[in-house]
Amino acid sequence: MQIQNSIAERWKNIGKSIFSEMSALAQQHNAINLGQGFPDFSGPQEILHSISNQLVHCHNQYSPPQGESLLRVQVAKFIENLAGVTYDPNSEVTITHGATEALFSSVTALVNQGDKVLLFEPAFDLYYQAIANAGGTVVPFSLKAPDISLGSWTLDWSKFEAVCASGIKLAIFNSPHNPTGKVFTEDEILRIASIFAKHGIIAICDEVYENLVYEPFKHFSLSNVAKIRPLVIRISSAGKTFGFTGLRTGWVCAPANITEHIRIVHQATVFCLNPYTQLGLAEILSQTDWLTSYLSSQRKLYQLKRDFLTTTLEKSGYLVSKTEGTFFITANYKNLGGDISDIIYTKQLLITKKIATIPLSSFYQKSPNNFNWVRFAFCKKDETLIAASKLL
Ligand code: PMP
Image (cartoon, rainbow, N blue to C red):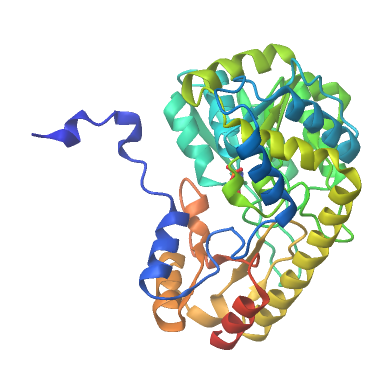
């Protein structure tokens, strides 16, 4: 039977995620995994205890599809304390199966066949898949790679204004940005907000790394800009916030008229999440002293890891862009690997040095020419990073 002919057209050209592929190769070659962005150590014990306590004691049947009310209330308080933005927990906050589902449900709720969706490339691969599933058309806008070793990625404003004037319905905007580690400044966000407002562009803001911003940088969100607020969908991840990616819990905050539609897609796909993780997280978010101290020490910890890996990569001959937030460093190998493609370079690095990384071209719809960038994840144990530095 020709099953291949039966596969839905819109999914035929979508391959396996590069992150899972590199992780599988890392395992196969017994390599150190600096590819996929998950910590190789446990999330906080306090969260484990809180969730396991709820697992034993809470009602263990379906939870409300929009999320447990206790968690929605705590999420609204958390965002208000963190970012100074208020959301109504009843009508504007929805708990999702990680940020992945929040993104997928938001795109599905808003994108029609042929709608133009702007992505800031390099961009997280899920965006392309969700847009393809909805029948939308990706309009890529490339961030400019830093020319010198100590810079971060930048925007060409005249090109940006032109692309936004080309009939874009929706943009997916990710800051702190995966994979570049760029944290958009308040000035940049205000300028982007004005351009989006001028053209009525809806913004899905992927802010999963909002709590992983390093000194002296600050996270500023499009949701902080009043004039664009009715057009902003703000997405977070408990997994990224707590360095605990197995939690599979996220939330999407949006004006009630948009939330209503996101909730319909959410209900039709995952229906609801398990109650114990949500109730355990609600308890954790209510412990504000613990929360503030945990997030601050986590930031310091990752900042040290970032500095260690940046120095290692520079000493090894890479040109390293400045990581202001996230778990990632982008590094250019043109002084090391010659003219080979990043796909071949990362495979060679994996086989010869036993280090798994991610080729940056996989974050583009169409790979740029002569592109020599790879992404390293530094959210790993010190011994993992030290072992990698010896191999590099
Ligand atoms: N957005 C970005 C930019 C990410 O890097 C990730 C995870 N790699 C996600 C969303 C998905 O987050 P979650 O694990 O909560 O589904």
